[in-house]
Amino acid sequence: MEKVTDVVMVRGEAELFERTAHLFEAATEISCAARDLHTWSVAQPTTTEREHSMRGMTVRKMYQPAVLLDPTLAGHLRHMADNGARIRITEREVNETIILDRRIAIVAGDHVGGVRGYTVISSPALVQGIQSLFEAAWHGATDLEAYQARFTELGAREILEQLASGCKDETAARVLGVSLRTYRRRVAEVMELLGASSRFQAGARAREAGLL
Image 1: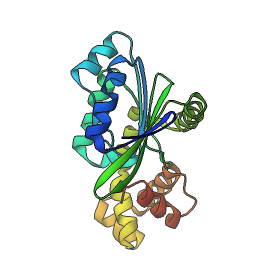
Image 2: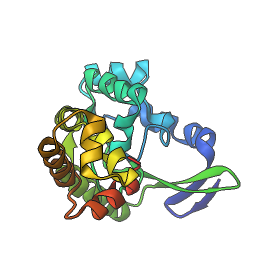
Image 3: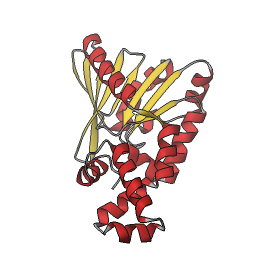
Image 4: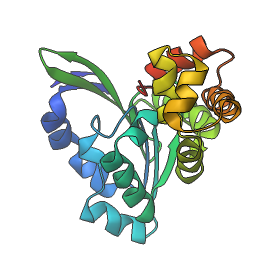
């Protein structure tokens, strides 16, 4: 571990867990942003975390839409929500971060030699800045239940797959078993869901979010 004042660099989740497990155990508020459920395996729900939730722990987790494409991961999100965590989905790019009690921030870095690096920050000024970025993203995100309902209702994954295939609307509508009018309406709704002004932009944003 390399330490520079109040910024600590660690390599791999094993070292991260070793260095921060006591912080997670003592925390009463955890805020987490990630692209998927794999980045922060050290922060996934455990019996201890569920016990903390029952005694008033605040857990907020924010993910990108790709997690909804895997039924297992989607079910895991639902399980976390059932155990007291607040889950939101964001279509924006997120900095993969965990904030503990608004005083410790852990930021995921790049993979080097197959091992991911993490930065543990305790500088009040830096943590406050990271907290502000998280809050802005959180307020712009959508609650899991509402997002999942819209995602499922629209058949968003199927629509995106048809758009990616480049086939004509008539063909796509036939494949999905809906009328041409219904297909085009759903395309427009998926574009709105992704905040896209064109089909091309919808495809680009879907790829950025890991939906394609």
